Image (cartoon, rainbow, N blue to C red):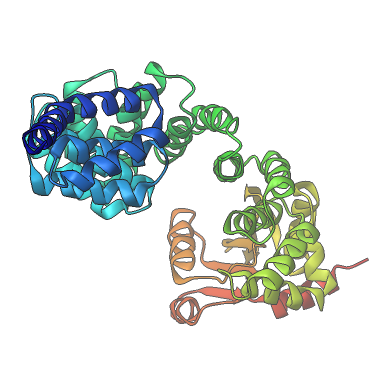
Length: 444
């Protein structure tokens, strides 16, 4: 009986020793089949017997990862790195890449980036590792550091559309707009549904002054619901650059209706709508947007200054009439203003929608010694504070036109530097308060 007992025990342990590897192979088949819960149960039992079995730890990490248990998967991948029984199919690079993916999924981007960086050192031809390193660096705002990794990924796979798109973004954030344009154009050529690439290509073209092509790219980006508000915002900026203010207002109003109230994009859409409305002389719309912004985000940019300017103009309707007048009415009021000041207009033109220029001539002396004196006028209704540079430019123009005297009339405030410059030259500055008196004098 004793002999039979020892034979039985020995046979059992021999069976267990022989069955171990076969059992692990069976578990591996369960993992490949997707029977993750069953595999997890068997792996835990197996590791109780052999907690330093490299393959078992690796399979357990894969199983946890497949079940969405990222934290547990990361712990097991770390155990694999400690045991380090590498095989031709389970390499250090493979384990680190798998762990990096789990770290990235769990939101630990810094450690994920560090793991991908190690993989790039282990395998200089791993396209994914170089791309993921660059991607995480871009997401972390480290655009300059990202560029070499993305370029290496594209050396290994020139047709990697996502790589070209990310490289273009990195160049854009480094203000390397020509390089950004080339990379982003390549991205959309390879994969036309790259809405993010279309968005950044539109932004890049705007910076390069290619405004109409920029609008087309932003139209494509707008198809992405996640980018729609930002794309409309960028279109508004581009249309303002084009001085297409009514179109800009239409686009920005559409963006406001779809953007979530109170977000930064919503605030900026309203701000740009106010800007476009102000430039197109639609002050009621501009003021409405400024008042909304001040309620939602007090002190945003120059909104308070704009509202202050408006309040000053509201107290004098005659100045307000000049400020909000259409182009033809602005010209008519400007002419009346100058003539009522006792000057005869020799030449008149609108410099732009907010500035008029006139050259007047006044005869002096008797019939035999007739002398003609020229006076240059600028009438500025944009309500921006008059700066020294503007007065300097005006003085240069006086010299070109042989004007003995100059008069700058502004609907805005006057900076001390502008007043100081004019005081030592034959230039008179008429501020908003004095303008109100002049406008009332020509009122019907």
